[in-house]
Length: 522
Image 1 (tube, rainbow, N blue to C red):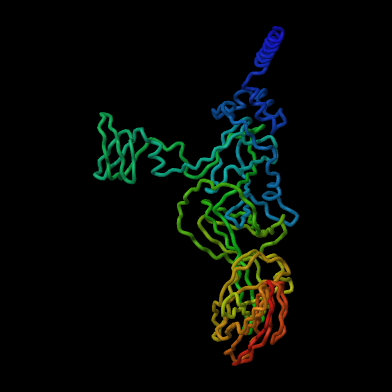
Image 2: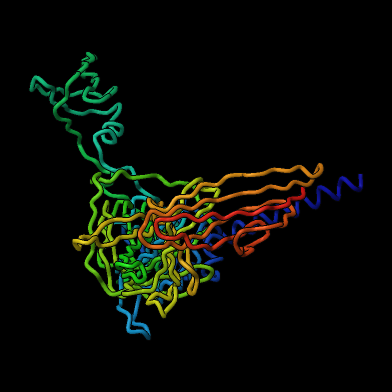
């Protein structure tokens, strides 16, 4: 019995404590303090409520800010890096820009912008429009550089855009007026709709099925947006015009590099032009924005976001005039390319901007026969990505297109190849095509089984040259297991554990045979 009395006494004390605490601290105010304390140190909004009263807290717009607000507040300084990325004039004389876009190669961009917004002390209802249709709402960050207590309390992403179907969906079971194909107007409760037809219930209970509708009239379209919009409940500790820094990630925009190489007559030097091609399908125009490009493979785990179908469906390509080149810098484990001038990226537009130019860069043509490629002698052009050659910047992966002028002085296309990311001082090798006049035939001339795990094989590679000039050809052979060359017609170089190369000269209008015998152990 003593134990039961003790338990009853403890429970009585506990409930008495709860009653006293609730009387001293109203539940509504307690929720506010808990919701905002992580972002404001526990006193920012508390003082605003005590001093400003209901009018100050509501911002004068009729919103009851403290009822039903999610207890999720943006950190006080979520994107301090935006200050240096989008505002002010840096040491390099950069331009003060209100909009900046960093574009990645994986159909992703980081949009950073500054906008002036009139706020009242307390909680404001802010509609932040003109955002990309492919925005990731979870990535939105907002900062007031002049007051760290400014924060977004709650955010809605409105992408239910105005359309005939969205309007009809909103007015199901409500009164509308339609004009049918016969020119007559009918009013009634909308029961159903599909394509060009609707079903209405008139006031007398009759049901009309109208197969062809020319016009639909509804009282209003409130609640639907013409463009994707972020709607914020935003707390501001002071009144006045605030310059907010906002950033978000969006899909629908990407970039890639393209290169044009124009070879001279004897294929020893070439003029090289590098371009970046930006494809904007984000559902928004970016006017006079700072532009940065990130080259490298970033890791992503984000799920696809709702897609707003843009009004313009036709992709418009535009070749931009040659502009000031990009500056390049190492950035984390990637490379960052910054355009010195602003650029305008229209929605549904592909734009090309000059990356670099290099004139009369030394190149080398190589004819390579690799048995893994069949009986073909392939043609490659190689060059060093060095400052001495007019290059010397890390080159993003992209397509190399090779051209050459013919005897009449007309430019002709020779071929193209995709190169990987190429660091400074590395070699660029682009496959051009297959030689027409230099051919190869590979034959296994002898085979001997020495034991269960040892064999000896002989090969001949016959190279033929129909040109009037001798041709240098590299013969690549791949060997497996433990191998040893027993004899060969020409000297070879061991490239790695499984590859050897013969470098030979095939005479003009002649042939050259490369032969060797190899012993392999498995």
